[in-house]
Length: 362
Image (cartoon, rainbow, N blue to C red; front, side, top):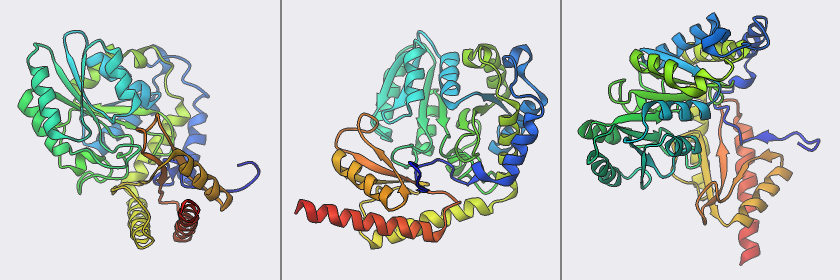
């Protein structure tokens, strides 16, 4: 960056697959099928490599079927707008990703929001939605991108059953890095002990833990067949490039075949949090790869981020309106690719910068 080499603690490459030789080789091989898909999936842009990727995603997530999209944003908007509309209701967590928020705005359904991960607030909104005759879709992130915390999915799923609502979970930051014993890479839904009947609509991206691009929706076969016919961003967008599909397939296979990447990431998270506690750094409560350091003041966040960059570390400085006023933070993203020495270097630079900030304000 500006001619200097920095250690990135700002990417979502949680397993280090963006630079994995097998994933890169798969992309290079996939490019031999063509630089692009040349048309939408329903015209002639759906190749065998796309079908193979969808089958593998369904297997890894424990779902009957899956459908690939060009991006997570279009996957969320397309799915919500296909499933609900006028006369229906979308119930959303207030900290949902922008793509879920925009899907709720665009679909034409009534939109209700509830306080972040507050089950009582969710039930109140479900009660309001149940007074209508339409369908109810509850949409939440499995892992929240700015706070790193996990949704209380078991409780949310139970309420959805009670009120006859569909549960849609955005697994952008959970897919590949968490899961259950039988489905170790399936995401936060599996980690919460939920199956397809509990959370029938699961979206995930291939641009984070998989190190590639694009996204998918996984669920019952009936859901996927329906989306093929009615998810407009899927129908009217050129298909995913074959190279991207091949890279995504290789990464998803690695998630199954090489669990050591998840184990290394978990070790890095545990080490980072333990050392941060020793240094009394103001970390938010997060068990995921996303470790927010809450500083509150926007100027302080920008100043510390600049000092970290001078020390050789690139960390995202997150300010309003991305996060609420007064909650500016450094968004530290850990990866299996980080070494212990790199993590130690970041922690030492953080402690030094925050100590200097404290002394200057005294």
